[in-house]
Length: 328
Image 1 (cartoon, helix red, strand yellow):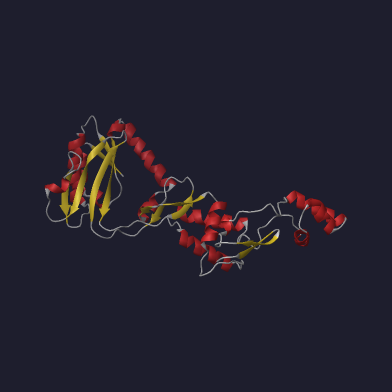
Image 2 (cartoon, one colour):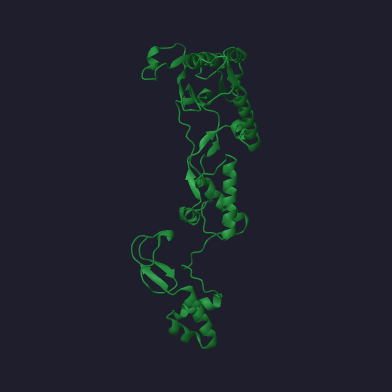
């Protein structure tokens, strides 16, 4: 749109060229360059003498001074543009935003803009929003006003993991782990953590969600993985040492060329779906014992999660007989 009018404190101004975004607007002249203190003095002077004399004395446009006297405020404002929400209402939106993020149900940009529209509509707040959502201008201005809100890439998190990651459970976990470390005099080189990760044939990357600036980890509840995958079992100790990976391919027969380019001593098996199971976890335990060589005098602690494959009785018996303390 060309040749539009922008209404400011000094009256309408003609702006030639394409339409400018409100949050990017910059004053091009020094007209109406008064400050709030000057306006207050002029309003006081107008009460003692006249509005015209006060406007002339302090260099303020007569209609501008009359408007501020009628409004009863000396604060500046850019034409007809106003914040949709008050500061308290925006804080309430932020608190809800962070609360949902802490529950692993963070809102992305589109969801947050729809929430702003619903919040304004429900509370009968006048707004310029269209198509049942707040616009990009409002969203960008909101982010500028609240730098503590940032857009982050979340990590897919299962419901079971989200429920387990609470303060009482975490404290109990570390207290019991400390007891085992003291009882068996285990150092950092003999404390191992194992976990599985899947390499999917289909993308399951969640959209970015709004979160608190500086937060170390951002998660979002995700559905069960779809598509074929290859599972990789990774293990390292508290001192930074790694066990060679163990790979589980979703196929009928194992081919040695599948391990081309893998780290030395990498082992692999095949299953119908590429998932880990009780028997494959036992295969990995044999691989783990061969790499760590635990003894009665130097036992190792193996930390793992509550995946069903980790509860396979033959695997637990094998770990016990080979001086591996399984801890989950």
